[in-house]
Length: 148
Length: 177
View (cartoon, rainbow over the protein chains, first blue to last red):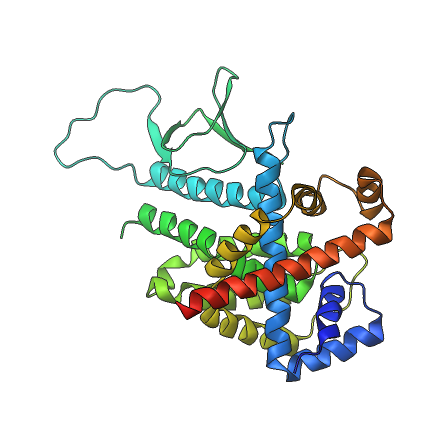
């Protein structure tokens, strides 16, 4: 059963603010008290949501040069990872509609960036940097950048 | 499903279940930088082995198991070098699974966002600054609000307890519908 002061103890545990003896005692309880373990995960989940929310609030703030928060950096990172995979697919398996005639193009389209969230930019060969939008075409001469 | 569509689906599921995965990982490592690092390695593993997943409904348990292994493999950085207890990491995985079934992270997320909206503006600002990494430590936060460090800690603690209670009320109301 969870005692009222267990909430404080769990919060201190997440903050790494417990003495070693208290930490070990709590970890022993976490292994034998499923309700306490669930409460720790619930509290940890709340921390995750608060960080994500605070990051979104910061990005919504029209202040100068917003930085990517860790959670938004992760989302941007996943988007770029997905784009990277799509790029690789475009390089190794250039697809063409059956029966279609390829149009001559000195810089072939490799892929389209499916999705991007956060500070993701595409660097053009000219040196111009543009914020990434959904469905951005990616050519062999473009470079994808993420902030942070 | 084509390779590209599968990768897009993997990315979508990762984003959909980020809160649940992060909640589990952070409960184990109790360090945000470590949790972010682990989540990135989990994302790579998920993208690479997504074809092994037979049904999208099994995504979260599958990804959580990948996370459990990555947590144990992760070498902790910084001053806290105490090894992670595999038994504890397993118990927390079981707790996360039970919690995800009883109270999906998406419901928790929606309820908490609604509760945050109901906070007074100054309290909301305090919570934003506490969590957005723009302030370096409690001293700077206390200075910004013209209060003592203890008073700021106490207010953050009260607010988090109030948010927890608010979330529980909202989720109970939804369950009763």
